[in-house]
Length: 333
Image (cartoon, rainbow, N blue to C red):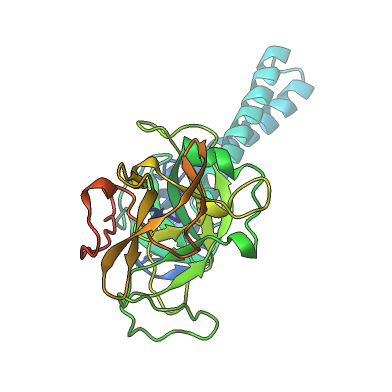
């Protein structure tokens, strides 16, 4: 299974900005910031018109309405104007104050606050650029947790109900990196025979309850703390390792193989599978005892032990002592 890493947050503006002053903070990619402050709008008298015209216009309208209301209130007391003119001035003042409060709220939206500390992965705008509401300003990546997403077929997802991911059933993830990398203390994975880094434990996070578009699979998400010795970025490929054979309701370890891995001999009547020998990279036949047929294959009651690798596809076309090379699926295949 080839998941993709994804831990992105799109920070979006919620208002339309009409201008900015000289006090700007240039956000550089790969800079760790909290909070993310895009710009500071200066509300000084000397730069008011250029900074945020909407707020200044609302403030001027409110001041003018207040003066007009005060004047007409005095005239109304002296019975020099009608009640209708007084009510109109009062309503105009309330409307101007509401517009001023709205402009102040819009001005407050020009500051962006990041919900978590992280790395700025991409800046989508340039300084002095006009933007619209809901337009993406920058992309922020979290540094504390990495999500590993995989697509699981429905036949396997059926077996995951009420499964506890404890030490006996611990999913792990493997990143393809040179074995010469220095391993930090606390993250000491084993090295595979091919010279790749070993595995890191992951924790189940969530899964989708609806099928993924265009496929009969469901998305399952695992998470892990980023290894300090590896530079893991969103979008990289990884290998998630799950021992599906250990999942059963009785608590006993049951091996399940696809039907394509089973080879029946017409001469002897034996049921065999081809086991891979990593020492000389050849195949050997192993007689097995079959159990019940399940949704994802058939049970193997005896003949194999934990850790054995067998031919899953094309078993009928191989021969004893045939030299083979294990196939590792590339990302996207």
